[in-house]
Image 1: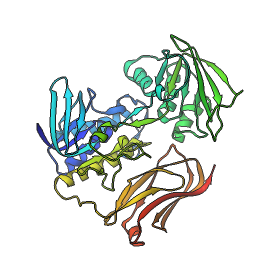
Image 2: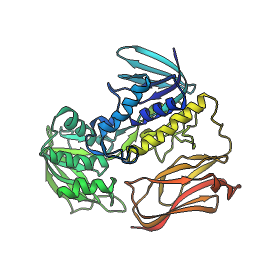
Image 3: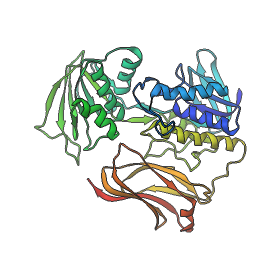
Image 4: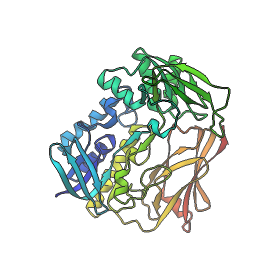
Length: 422
């Protein structure tokens, strides 16, 4: 059994940023375990630009952004063991992993950082009627085929869901010579960033059908077409008589991401039903002492720059924990998601908070001329105005220690939206 001070599971943008910050804080006995053959995570196949504006003040492609962090890991000599699958974590921080080169290995860690990222929601979770024919891919799989393998999934494409990767693939498939017939979204609003709607759909005259869904799939061996219908915005049930048939050979699914928290659960960490990630305090420490969570495995981000910023904090706090410098959480307040707020992170904040932290969440709908309010107990302590809030873009706000001093008898912290819903 190998002893490690800080063991990081995942070598994508979250794991890389955590490792670098832990090293710069003073830790030297660090190990990254990555199941793929190379570091970089999903960014390796994201060849479009738009990364790094917050972190590096310049616009980079996904591989360029990842390489900045990979180069720093190599410069520091932080060991990374790729092609290694972690299969078990115990609450006392014993990690079991398997790889082709080393076989079965056991690691005893003083601290663990969970940075496993997400997987895409598959067709099987949708319950769409029709044959299980070829030609149906998740948007990320299609992205890997086109960008890394040089293979075209098809020529006539319908995209179900308007997550960012689906929007980006609408543009990418157009660049590759395919005809994208429509992007079909169940909700009355898009789940993607506004800039991606403009740059990936509007600029190429690709229709975005809001409050629509695929109700039937035609084709036994290969996809032949899909039937799309309008849905009731309140019940989300198809409206009879609104069906429209699209002849196509490819259906791409961009219907949500699922944080990969099977290992988190094995470690006994408490999971938030709102984010499907771990519940954490302001230090990004989970309910199991010494285990930290960050990046998309904690909650799905909209920008990788925020993943890096959050994960760097996890790395610093893991170092402090190993050094015995991280205060034990005793008097904490629960962070409650109020009206218009979904999945506020962190879920717990110490009453002895000594420096500002960032609270992040996604709006539950589209709100115009809104303000985000923070209540400590029954007292409103802060408000931040916004022209528009949408589910596709995360909201970040600073929570200062002085807010807690305004109501020392409070039992909770509530984050809520004040606005008329569009």
